[in-house]
Length: 83
Image (tube, rainbow, N blue to C red; front, side, top):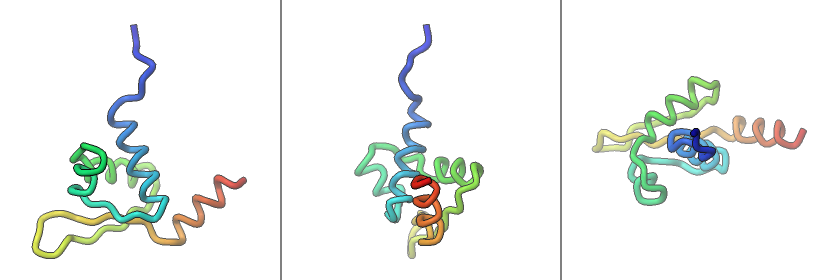
C-alpha cells in the first residue's frame, strides 16, 4: 500500500523553493539548523533543472555556497500566482 505522504525530497524542494521565493538567502548550514537537512545543493540543482534561475556565490573562506533568487524572478513568480 502506497503512503499518501509527500517524499522527503519533494518536501525539501518545496521548502527551498518557498524560502527562495520569499527572498531569503540560503546556505547549507542554515538549512541544517532550520529544517534539518543538508541536501541544499541537490535541491537547488533540481530547481534549476525545472527552470528556476537560482543564483549562487561561494561563501568566502569555505567550500559552501549561498543561494538566492533575483528580484525579477521573485516578482515574475508572484505575478504568475496572482493570475
